[in-house]
Image 1 (cartoon, one colour):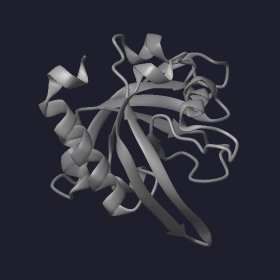
Image 2 (cartoon, helix red, strand yellow):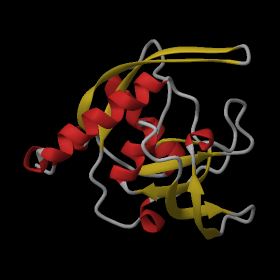
Image 3 (spheres, one colour):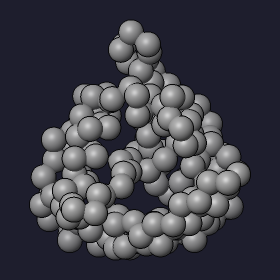
Image 4 (spheres, helix red, strand yellow):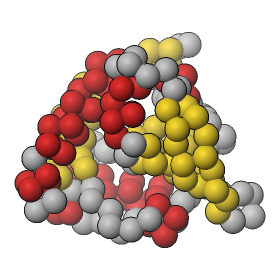
Length: 168
């Protein structure tokens, strides 16, 4: 499970971990056009056909005068390399990427674990990648609605149980 660390320069939720990648589709775009967010934020050139849809999930974030109501199209991507070689981050958007064991993340989202270990890398001001390992809690995550995180992890879990269909 890969999580991106939002840049400290982001207006909304700076320095918090979020799903990788996230973005808004413009009114004149298709869902397939959303792959541009992946390349813009993470530097991964991926085609829409390489993504595995796991559903559309409603999410609401209402916090400190911030209101965000979305229908999130959620996809999985089978990255067959390490995160250090996979990602070329746009540091204005993303300042690091970490991996978490999916079962640990699943338990964290359900309150069955209070904290989990993650490892990955951050990007220094000079663009160098630096190793990053730490322990995170739900307070370190963008405050998606609890239902959103439960649904996302349920759908991923179901897809992983049927690995044959997931890994094509």
